[in-house]
Length: 436
Image (cartoon, rainbow, N blue to C red; front, side, top):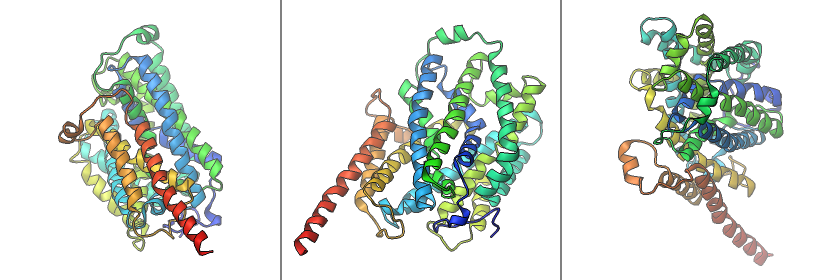
């Protein structure tokens, strides 16, 4: 194992590899937040919402989602193990396999979507077979995953990627705003329909929340929990809000009809816009890198003896095949469905961490009560804000409250997790006292 590109498994990261400070974490998560997919996701909020309502939804969802992400980063730094291994403590060793399977599926799905975004951007700039761009994007992401998080931040983000992307996005922001009638946009009402305001908040939360089951995979290399929290929270919040807002403004100012057309509009916006899109497309490979790497690390929670690099190659191959059968426009419901799983799951993890269930290697096989708390939170989310395939949403679509699903499902899972734990602990203390 190279010290520059360590392929570390599920054991706690040793002190010699805990190299990330607050700046490293901020640069990592800023880089991951500066994504074409985030830009495209912002277009989903309008014109159903007015620009004012969309921006408010972006800020509200951004604050809540990024605080959760920062807490997940903190837990990873304190425990020094990957995210799926962390879940052994609240759910049990075998109990953690269910979220592991879901996380692998979501990482493969995100890889597919990111590769499609990169290939679409490349195809908009350089005409040619789409399948070639898919293979190029998947290959670049796989190469970065094999380098590992430390090498990625130190060799790619710090030296090149972050600065080029910031310059590109600064230009695209000016390009979107310089001839726009912002006063008219600000006063234009929304058209209604999907998403409502709180669905927009959920959609915004879904982006940082989609990183919850991955955050510890990277912040386990952090020197301190505090630097992991602040670097991650602030590092991801700023580009997340920026690009969601930019995507919404681009769709309104350019009169576009759907999300994928944003990339085509940028490619046709002149030489400078095309160069900026090219830079973003090249840098976008960091997103599937993170998903491929975390899928492999997650699989090691179940298959600890399989080499990480072999799992990286397998995951990349499966995701590459998926790019030929999945359509980019399906991603909005995909984001919301992910949130409904992982928001309440993190509620259970945080609750158990606070009551002292922190050792993943001392956990029993299954903690059924905590799994129940998680699934109850998932059920509440889907009851309040159904998302997913049509047959599922028709089955659970029994109410249309105005509060969204993210905050209530997190709170319900968190409180139920504690409620199921404290009585048992009190009984154990009384039993020990009776034996004394």
